[in-house]
Image (cartoon, rainbow, N blue to C red):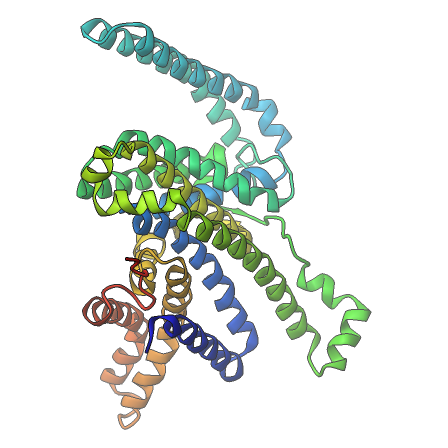
Length: 437
């Protein structure tokens, strides 16, 4: 198989697998898989920019996705007036104190020469700023969380359309990526991985414990939808007549239409990011990034600012992950910090990039579709396989019951097997990065 034909053939096989699910299970299931595949592909594109373009080993994908999710809450949910009255203004003073402390630290480090005096003044400013922040923050947080904690207990959001949360999620994640990059990019690859993982866990711990921000582990549900609701479609006589005209039940037709609307929105975002990523990859900037990735010493000797370029690509990749995180929260209709696990939001995304083809944007998209498809379908396939293998055993057999109960864990075994096979027989991925000479 030639390299030029490998990509189209792989995507054709992927399309065939999705059609098999549509005809064999249901089109509703197939569209659910497609929507999550689209979001996963965008996350994989963000990681591919960091690792495939620049060789930055980021295992904090979960943190960027979570920041995108909380952005959806802060943008789309209506403000809680009682909470703002109880402690909202003190929170604004807290933010002002935080900004003032940061500016004061920057001023000290800019104006005072390096040495012991600068260290002492920096510590004094930090301690004073911390004390002032706690004076406003602690009573404000307690007052906000006491406002009807069963239903609210947080400040709410801005009440804006949730589609605006997608770029806002990218901006929030980009800001966090900039801060992480300023701290950790000078570290060696293995230390960078540890730092990004630790910072991602810190982000998640904050989101779980600061109830005033987004209700913590009590979750935020009922987020606004950018697409129609099924019940609204089912109540429409015109929609019901059109559904019956094509031989479908109203409930099934409404579900499929809503998922198609989501798929159209997600596909539009993927296409925009893909076009921009391809243009950047093949631009002089992209060639410079790959040169830095392949040999930092030589690139630096040629006058390239390696640290600045790493900062740029880390921020861009983080922003893409933040957009995907906001999209995922929009699809779920709720923000649940407890669901952000490294297995789903870091390990799987890395497997998508590795199996699809590191350094190749098309490979990242293919990996997003293929790996998520396998992750979802491995469980029912494993259940069918165990049922077939144990069909000769008695229905009361303890072995049969144990194997059927363990079928859900087949996805973990299958994912590990796929990764091993990919590393052994296709170490550059299903669609490798083209080598230009």
